[in-house]
Length: 632
Image 1: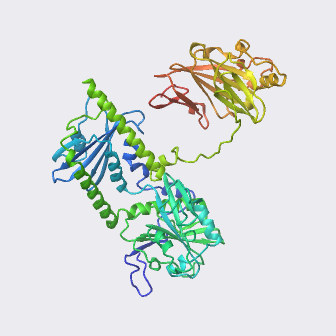
Image 2: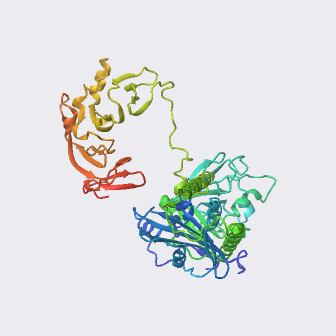
């Protein structure tokens, strides 16, 4: 459909097609059912930014060459097992003027992989100059710039508020504040964030001096950070009727949401009302107070390829969360589709071609020195001579250091793929620390909370610490506790004491320890705790417990490369108070691992026992081990 003015003239410089759900007669829209099956991101985020995610900060190899038409290209290869369940594989990225190619190739330890065989798999067989390896670690910075031409993994969307009857962009951009309905939609879209010192994706907004407003709306959706440019939150000027500062941001957004007040019979928004050569998609949103629903209508410039999800018929959403999911997916897909239009695609291709040629010219003086023509892809260092091996080790260490520094800088800048950015150390934690003891004179080896108190293992024994009170010794230093769990609901304290062959798991009743404290008894010694040790745990170096105490308590103990599974009897709560807490535990089975684990935790299944897994970390990888079968 072509949306046009009353006199039939085509709107704006380009044509717009309208999507309002009425023409989608074949869609049977059932709230909840249709959404789950049809609303999904197209070209999902995990297909992009391979170099950042899998190469940067790791040992890998980079090559440069020219094809038969003398066009330069760059190739990067890394040996990786990420997302492939411990099966090693090669990931390769090829940068050419026509775009970027990515492939995965299987790894064979007895067969080396040549550069030409990888390029052949990418349909590049003929060369003007054979590929040569680039040993300079600074190349990582340039390849990161090449990858950024794929487009952003984060998005900035405009949000424009229009009162009933407003039909020009000057009127819409001049609204100083939005209605209660508009504020309700903003709260649905994301969270209001303070821009000053904001460390996430900023979408071009000022996070230092408040020149683009004090607050904005931000959210993360399925691996994408989204910053909204809200017209009523951007700076307002009484002198400037055109509100250039607001138009500068929203007019340069590919996608804009227009929230329009008024009834359906009121004059409706048309793309011709906005003077922008950059915005390709408008999402018109109206709110119906009578049935608490949102109605959506999409305008897309006709050069934009079709993108999903298709609007339901009628395009009315009574479930607000469903509307949010649909709108965000539609807008993300819309912006990605717009980047494939000739205007954007040609510009991106020209930029990529220019960057590749410029980088190749910069490398020309080095093409005949400090480069290797033939080297197989392997993380194995050269065996001889010794001086060459040391030199290569030093080069790889510097290569990794520069790559990791680049990765961290990108994350801090807020330009990293969100799956990494939102889990990085630079992000704020969802809790704040609180000083419990100003001058603790011992070195703490471990501990756990006990009501408002702390039970802490130190080099002087286990101490019970209350805020502002002197520490009370519970166990003396003959028991060197290095790991402990305090389970108040089960009246249990589980600890791992000593090292090497003398290491054991000890189990205590919390009520008995509390009584010792109240009676001012001397701290228990190792000899007095001999009845509290689990005998089969001799020589253990690690243990983990289940966290969902509504089910039976499960304990997994690591003794070198053997796991011992222990459970607490379901009726153990009724055990006589005078009996040893050790009696409530029973041994289930042993599981053999390939290596001693470094860290481990229990992963509780939702229902059945056979859902239970143990997540085991070795030095270089994580395994999921089935508790019932022992399979990894």
